[in-house]
Image 1 (cartoon, rainbow, N blue to C red):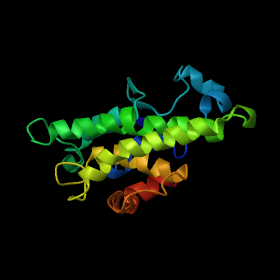
Image 2: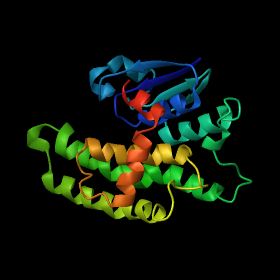
Image 3: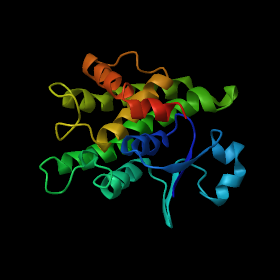
Length: 206
């Protein structure tokens, strides 16, 4: 049985969304955020105290974009959803991998600073200037997404893939942090398409 540890609207939404897209059975444990503070017993499962933590038998993974790739590669063909991945034989394979890694290493990183210093820290430790600076940094990095969507509906391979799940989560997080006010039209329309998907709706409700 596949098993996922999740906090609502955290990075674990990426693999949860993928599980729903693939129609796979799974066991879900929803934790309070951040679990390293409010569910200390979770540290015995993931010493970092971060989500996601994903298990496929004795396979254990904690990186959300990597879990998306793993699910697409291992279960896509079995579930008749091989289009969710991009194979090495396809021209778009490099672009696909780049977007998967971009989603966390480049796009989501500045959002974590905004979240910490505008919301999570006690009032006395909040840093409005840091939150504002990293919001601007996020928008600088968003230019790559906007450019990619100028003439297409999805990021690569002319179809919806795990890369859209990974990057789409970063855009969704911006709406949760209320830093999406300046989204350019192609990005806002893209996010609307993603959030209208039945699998996303199911995942976001859990």
